[in-house]
Image (cartoon, rainbow, N blue to C red; front, side, top):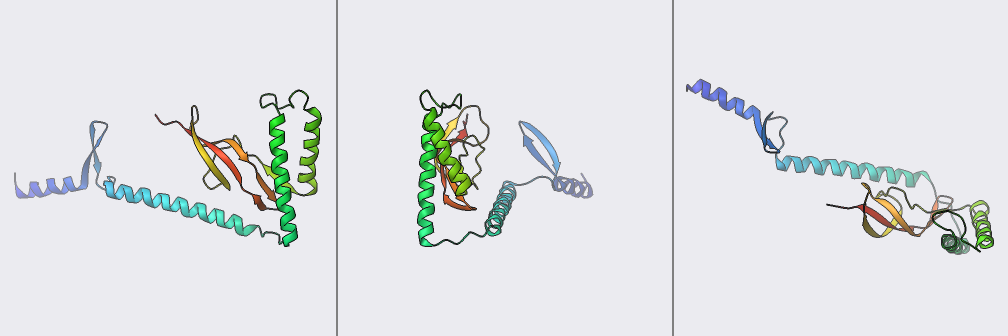
Length: 187
């Protein structure tokens, strides 16, 4: 083989790369083939961009809502309202049948009283009680994950159980919710 043909062959080999994919060798242009190091760098760069974008969204949401200023006495009152809201939420969960969403036998009057407490908290005191059970879980959510458990039949993280609800007053978190997250089972 002549030197000219040898150089031409070497140049073509540099322009293309053979990549094994599932026991089949595929010839790709060198510009498309990534080495393990460059692939790791691409993945790391993408992950960094996603984290930066998420942090920017989180920061902009925080800055958009100025928190109302409260005195020490008002702060104590708000904490007490958060405790009342949490205990009313817990009592309501205990007396409601999860399948029918109706009060259990003999609990109808207590259910009405708890509804009155919840209405007063929500309408008169502007307290919001959030129970995120059943929602998809996103690590950026304002929640404390107490535990995570593998669950069959899901392909995303989902909030399986709420231990404590999130309590909010005028955009201010009085209590961060505590949850158990269900994760997809790995094979």
